[in-house]
Length: 234
Image (cartoon, rainbow, N blue to C red; front, side, top):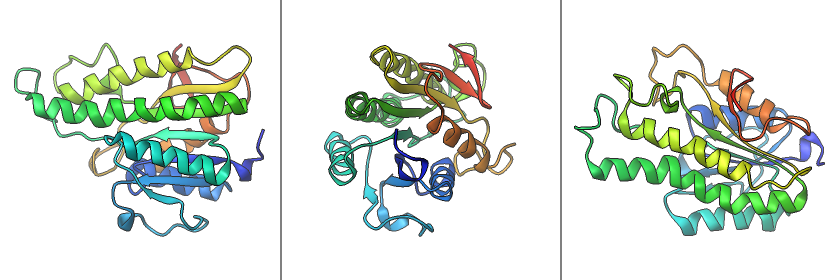
C-alpha cells in the first residue's frame, strides 16, 4: 500500500465548498490531489498542490472524464482515491409536478452519470493495484425516507438516491479480499454556495470525514452509506 504522503486522490468540483476543503485537508495530510474543475482559472492556489494537477473537467463530458483519469494514471501510475463531489442543485423549491424534464436531465447528468462515469473508469485500475477508495458524496435528501418528503428538491433527491445505488453496484464488483472500497458519504447540511450560510456544518467537517474514509484500513466498509464516521446503511 502506498505511504500516506504518496497517495494520489482525484477530487471533482475541487475549486469550492466541500471539494475545496477536501483538497486542502488532503494536501495538509501530505496527499497528492488531482483536482477536476470546470474552469481551472477558478481553482485557488493551494499550498502543496503540484504543478499540472488542476485539470479541466466537466463530469457531463465523457471524453473529459476519460482524459482526466487517463492523464492521472499516466503521470502517477495509479489513483489511490476518488472523491465524486461535483454536483448541482437547481431545483430547490420545486416538487415532482413543477420539475421540468430539462432540469431533471441536467441534474442526473451531473450528480449521477458524472459519478458513474468516473467510478467505471477508476475502479478497474484500483482493483488491478489491489488498493483504492471511492467516496461518492450523497445527501440526506437522497435517502428513501426523505426523497419524497416536502421540501426535498425532486431532481436532486432522485439523483442522490440513485447515486447510492450506483455505489452499491460498483462495490459489488470488487473481488473478495481486494482492498478497494466504494462508499457514499452524507456530508450533512454544509455552509457552501449550495447549502447556504445558515447551514449547521462548515465544509471542514465533512472534508475530515472524507479524508478518514480515503485513509481507512483494509477491511473497512464497502458499499455503505456513511454519516459522521458511522455506517448508517450496509
